[in-house]
Image (cartoon, rainbow, N blue to C red; front, side):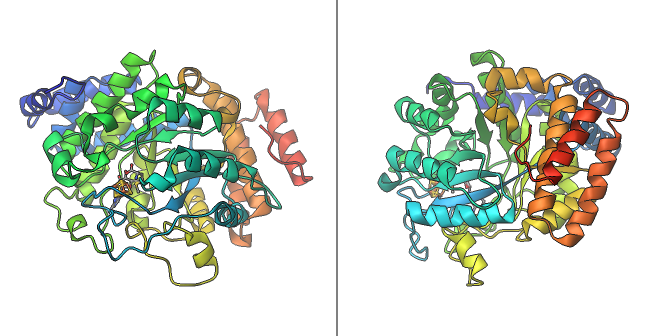
Length: 465
Ligand code: SAM
Ligand code: SF4
């Protein structure tokens, strides 16, 4: 077998070595994590294997503290746009898989993308992730054109300012094309880092059957000049403890190969039931809520400078508990059928979707709730547009930049949301939150700038950063 950065025996040795660690061992790791250092695999293994209630609570508390220290109290909002569910692969857990006869196939035309994007903009979205099945029709020309279409669609108050991509692993040449059309993050989930499981759920006669082609997708993106890359694992396919170690090894590999630039974000979706897909249910490795909370906190402690995405796959009550453990980005108002924004606006029945959405509340409801969770909703896309990505983003993330730029930008973009899209109730709650965060800058040089920009926004100016 070719050697690569996932060494299964080594991972299991590390997990076995630290079965049931002593509280003192856990606290030693927490002391290091508190200094915002990326953890080594053995240290993460200690946290994974910790069964002691008291120190687990300490892990949760520190994860929350680190998140607030590194990212501020911001929660960045986005929403997915499903472009096509045509797929030549046959991933056993996914409703889009080619052999699923119950799925109606649909691929948006450029005009339909425009319609969807206008609805999204009208709801207040500024940032999206475009999602594609893997099919010859959604080739690189189509993907590039769809990104252009997203950026050129304008509406009364705005536009999508950042389009991330979640599609099949691409070649270096194809990724160079994506770089040219100005994508934000290139996101590919490995699904599982365990080869045997990977081979079982991804039939070998499909493109996705190639584990290594997928494992090095982010490397090819970096080589093609895309320095915002994202990783993820689909939890429920194999032992969550192994997958967390896999995500950490992937992070370390990228950091070591690309001058300290690890993944921009990590995603940790859990498998949801999907239409015509019995293999997405009754999973032997399904992750329960308690372990899910633990794994999110462990990722936060292990990679303090990486964004963490929690999607609307999760139900509202789970999101409320998990967000404080280190999440930096959530989606709101998401529709995951192809053409789903239009059908939901027309009050039609949702199309056949990839999986069942756990949180189908409106963006406004979720924004309003976020305000009550000691957090500031943000629609900021400034770093990406100012070219602060990859290596330079990591530098900025590690300084007072977050306080002096990210928090004010969060305030400005949230103010825009309140002025242009919020319901009256959310506006009242939101204005209070803005006042509260503004007061945290009292006496600082930047206070005047924030006040001035808030006034400009009131007077109709937009997109200030
Ligand atoms: N086709 C591309 C691929 O597989 O990478 C991108 C689109 S695919 C729809 C995006 C992600 O959806 C997959 O990487 C997988 O992790 C996730 N997914 C698939 N089936 C799922 C399910 N039943 N529940 C939750 N997430 C699922
Ligand atoms: Fe296709 Fe992606 Fe679904 Fe697999 S996960 S069936 S590649 S859409």
